[in-house]
Image (cartoon, rainbow, N blue to C red):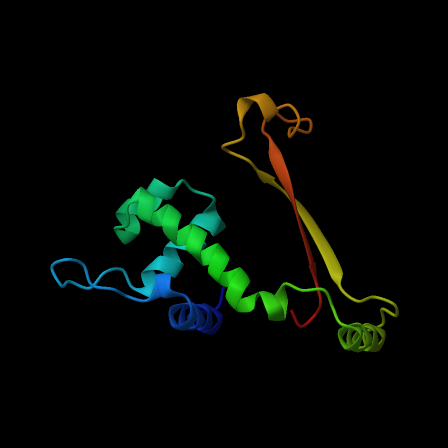
Length: 149
């Protein structure tokens, strides 16, 4: 993720989601900043690590890390959902079809990408359902995106 995008996300979340505002503890010391909370959540999502794995790096405990992740996901949906997590409007479709035709792909509105991501904490009872030839269970992640989103 590039820095301007990351700082934009941190700025919007800290301004619009109460959890990401820096607070003071009982002794008057500043608590975790929005930057620390967002970094922790994105690291958990990007690397798929356990919540207590960021304890050493960011000095955040397991329960706080889990809370940061939960609030980050809810915050992203609430703050950016209307712009980025929605069905395309008629105007969007017309613009995307025109852009696809200009690039030599008439009738294309976007592209789809799928990947199998290893599910480290898959319940034992479900392991066989989510394994495909290998011993490790995976989850299929799908993404549909247009050129501008």
